[in-house]
Amino acid sequence: MNADAPLLAVRDLHVEFSVRGEGLLAPRRTLRAVNGVSFEIRPGETLGIVGESGCGKSTLARAILNLVPSQSGSIAWMGQEMRGAGASQWQAVRRHAQMVFQDPLASLNPRMNVAQIVGEPLRTHRPELSAAQVRERVAAMLDRVGLGAAHLNRYPHEFSGGQCQRIGIARALILEPRLVVCDEPVSALDVSIQAQIINLLQDLQQEMGLALVFIAHDLAVVRHVSQRILVMYLGRVMELAAKEALYSQPRHPYTQALLASVPIPDPRLERAKKVQLLQGELPSPLALPGGCVFRTRCPRAFDKCAAEVPPLAAVDAQSRAACWLYE
Ligand code: SF4
Image (tube, rainbow, N blue to C red):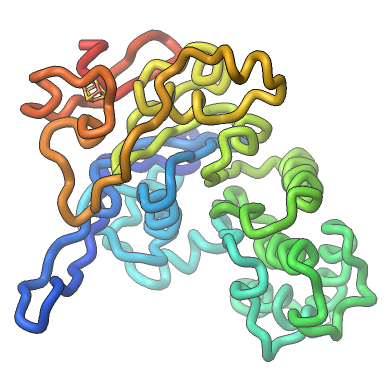
């Protein structure tokens, strides 16, 4: 592995699913969930990924850890190509790259107690550790996520949503990974608990030097945690920019509409907002619009937008956007 390479570099990744058409004899159709996505992440960095439900964020998260198969492109872990790699090579990467899931309770095995759930990655990846050493490390990790060793013998149904997510975070961090992919880790939690979980993730990130891929549909959450932000729409990257640039000068019309739809707490300012909100429904990923995928909802679309797919190109030093306005 190349120590100077990004921790993770994804190039032109495509993920497709074959789905049944409507009707008994209807032919199968191709759902393009991730359509030519590229990005990289460096050690200790947080990359936020945002977009509406159904835009391919969660599929992308699973594909980069090989939890769903990808059809083409490249997934390089520290310079080593992993797409097409065998189970043992992925097993070695998973020692360093873990995932925190959206639904904390559903992601925990109800038949295992907390000691078994959090200790499972250690038993898989560190077979040299004795049972006592595993239990000791699990107890220490539970302390770090604010639960305490008293919970070791309890089962997932005995915990609140926020506590279940702390268990999920403990399970993801027990191997001291270099990268954690967080797939909407707070969207199933009460607002009051969301801040606690985000603060916990940030504290652990600083303490352990972790890189995070943080997926959310809430722009405020992503703003709080990320250094760079990638905006997705119908499986494609619309904009990739430094956080400050994205929030102060969003370039892509989709990013502008997403930001405009975030309410301003001051009613006077909210009423005075003169921005174009996102119109219409998200098209089906089974029938993607030709040309720019955002053109059916874009207030600035023009002829070329229907004819050709805009590439993700540099607008300035801070931002890249897939939009013909910046040709
Ligand atoms: S390429 Fe055209 S349709 Fe797409 S975002 Fe830009 S202006 Fe809108």
